[in-house]
Length: 61
Image (cartoon, rainbow, N blue to C red; front, side, top):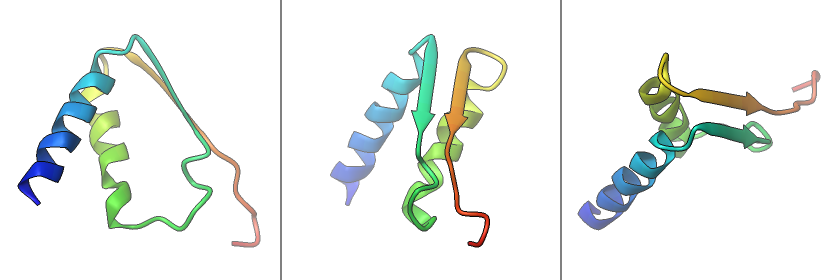
């Protein structure tokens, strides 16, 4: 598990450095505990760099 956490931190660190980050279709699947990193990315980029989060969802869901 520590290895996975280390890889996750490195991945998020790389995403923090991208000038314009676009994440699309991130609500296409059921939201789970594993998706929390998306909010972590958003928080770390807040007021520093541009991020666009886009998705479509079925209004019936």
